[in-house]
Length: 116
Ligand SMILES: [Zn+2]
Image (tube, rainbow, N blue to C red; front, side, top):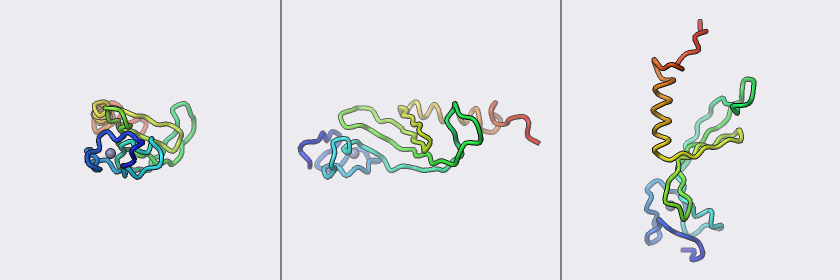
């Protein structure tokens, strides 16, 4: 164990969060002790909301993050276009449901209306 870093959530050298891939106790910087899941990556075409044009292929990475010393886990969406978002797990589930309802089959935003 690295005695200088907070190790909350670590019991006898093992992290209590089953999703965490941080190698606690062998990190170099205190921020490296944050609990992080493996990232799930997907490549999508995207742009920043204020931009114009066709966007660009970019990689989104989804994962869980609990900062050392904090008591809440965040679901983080990182992008390759300079935007990121951290949602509570409840917020992420709400977003998931709303996306399904709105852009899934039969959703109000499922089609543009100008398709042939
Ligand atoms: Zn951990």
